[in-house]
Image 1: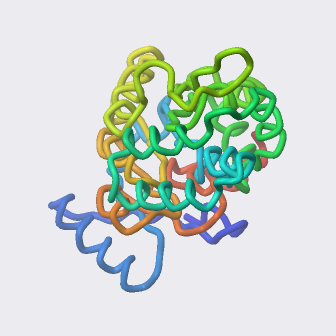
Image 2: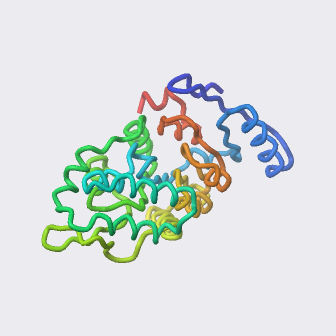
Length: 265
């Protein structure tokens, strides 16, 4: 079945085989050697049943890394970006990397959060993805290592009611350079996915996780379908499939939703 010809060509094929694991491994090798994005999933009605789709925010739902934008406001963008890249590659524990980066923000006025929020850019296809999921009865959610103070107003505008993120400590209208409460790290993202699945009544095998960084690996592994979105090789190794195109709405094709259905929705 030809699911879409825009913004990418997408086909759904039914392949018969006695060994699902061996079939997946063989087809994954073919996909890698030919440069295709491919997901191997069991066929059945469950693919069109209610799903929970959990996304990372920075560099997935958003084109930007919020902490990098905050870094630009305090004149330490290069230093923060270097720590971010190291964390994304899995070289530094996420919680430690977050503490280091947030410490560099000490003294910034709280008003900077409004400025950063106003400059956030959604990934191409993000609005289409969210709108289509909501209209077809799926549940979108966002689990982010970023900051709730920046993300919450945007997610409320997008009608995303399930989300979790870290929180900046603010005292007297100024950022203290510390994170408030427990840090939402790699393990925390997976726990949030499980919690949201229980809240909306969706079994884990009908959850989808989408992310790009090393701190998304546990979430991608726990979900019924883990999608590495323009991710580093380390992340792709732990995901069921990878998307190498910049269009976030291509996630819909892995749910068997055609372009015609997207446009109708």
